[in-house]
Length: 78
Ligand SMILES: [Zn+2]
Image (cartoon, rainbow, N blue to C red; front, side, top):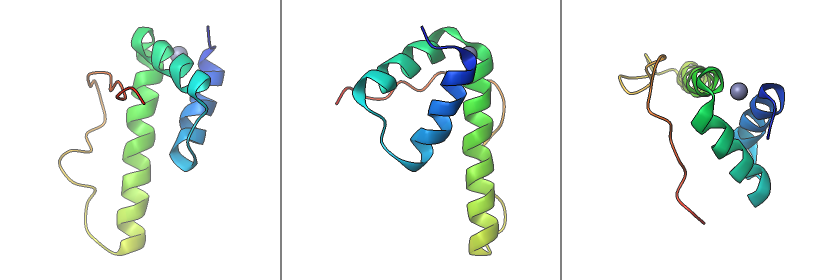
């Protein structure tokens, strides 16, 4: 079982590169049971989108990038 510290590290890593299958599975399982890390993931995605919008010179990140409670996103099986 991943710790929250490991899970957040993997979430950050996942943004930049594809995770190995075992780490991806461990992270998915952790996110199913950990509300804090799910929230962190939502915020991380929002921040990345916001930074990208600012870098592109567009206005706001958009309606779909809402920070807060969201259903866990379970990636499709490989
Ligand atoms: Zn956690």
